[in-house]
Image (cartoon, rainbow, N blue to C red; front, side, top):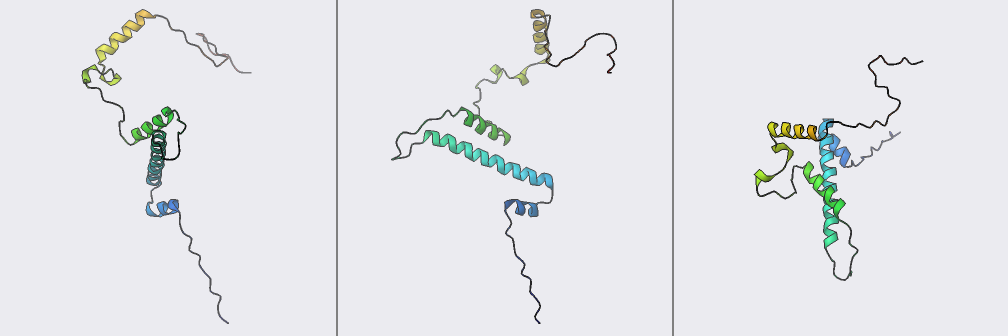
Length: 140
């Protein structure tokens, strides 16, 4: 009698299976997957922004959307790739960024804030809370 020949089915691997075979390190796999997800979101946001301003012949007037959210997603994803999409200021000395403040200026600002409001009110929304110099009450 002839032996039964087993057919081995060759499963085609998807993109994730190919990624697992190509790269052994899990962290590197996640970094590559993360890059592709960010690229997908970047392409999607860029496409939506482009479609908001493009008119196709024969389609008539399209509804306009507020591009603020999509633009913020677009610039946020660009920032993850290290691209700064904002406009640069012409005079670097006039930029009011927090990184350009000196220690002396920061101390002066703290002193002025202390003089303007010497007391501070703190609102706690978690109860019950006891603030006293004694020992905390024992739980029963």
